Image (cartoon, rainbow, N blue to C red):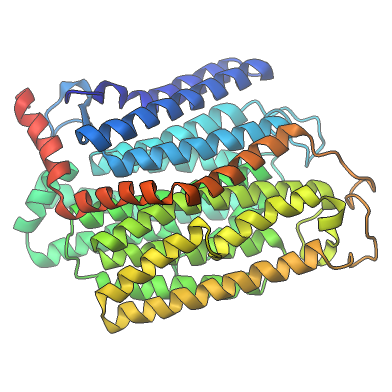
Length: 519
């Protein structure tokens, strides 16, 4: 174990897992489940904040679990990148939990019969949080795989809450695609161990250069494919728009915010640490461009706002892949900043859509209208993050995209400049897609000629309630705060990117601690 705050690192996973066990034992006692879940996620947020400070000021915090040797056991590593991902993911998960408590989804499925207990929501959400955190702090490939499988199990349960045919069908598609990527990932792990004798990331960074170039390229390609499926990179993104919109609003929100970013994180970590100066950079740039364009064209064609946002989610994965493909300090810094922005804004927008559905009875823009007058607050809550996602200045979305564009221009290759043009075009088309929905759902007359009415379901205006408004407003405020603190945040992401490119801070922390401990 390294000095400093490394003893806190395992608690990031233990807290949600202990909470999951307690909430499962408290099935049927909703109040107890809520207290345990909120406490566990709040504790994770505090721990993540402390570890972000510690990793930024003292270097990566390393824990050898059980005192095993570095090439035999689990190593947990929290550097700036991992700490930043943990804190933002935990904040949005806490907001989603608060929203679900306010909505009642934590205890009942209101979209079925309104009386079906769902005691598994809390333990499953906490297992999901543990899986996300596990992937961020893993120091070896197999433990990273374990985190992905925790995510898969928990997300399937959340996706099929209520047991409707539509949700089960969407969940089946999601699981099949995820299992395919997991098989590829597991095969890559086996081949990597066979070729190098280790799956520890720090040791792999030393040994991969000693094997045949063709073998290293095959391992890299297999890892990229596995992570690209999980991140919904084109042409492996078709599963996402059909899977996410069927789930309840809190579940869709946490999926949209987190699940694809786990794949992006894995790509950042492995590309920089294991395969610096990648020979697949041009391939990644092409995939980024296609993901941007195909995703946003799909968004423009949608009438349902959930599906529109699902396609924009795909398109903006292209921006993240752009920064990874560049591999430069500026490109990685902008990509990390954009990950933080995108997790926050996408989660916020899907929570707002839950409010839209409560007010208007649907998320189909052709069935909505005049929502800005019916509920001005919902209109504002949608407009602000939507403009942020579209990249309107001075929001954080604009700042992140400018950073990526500048990194592309600095790269100077014709393919990087083509990506710059694609980024600008995608941003404009995103604004068009958002403006179309904004005009149709919030300002036009209802397609049924019913203006000033409440939801289609029930024929009266439902009170939203502070329970769902407060967490949504809080996340909108977090999105705005990213603009206010963009300077310091970019400083952190730049320092993180410098460490990723240099690699020595990570390697010295893991291998140096190993030497000090005699492992």
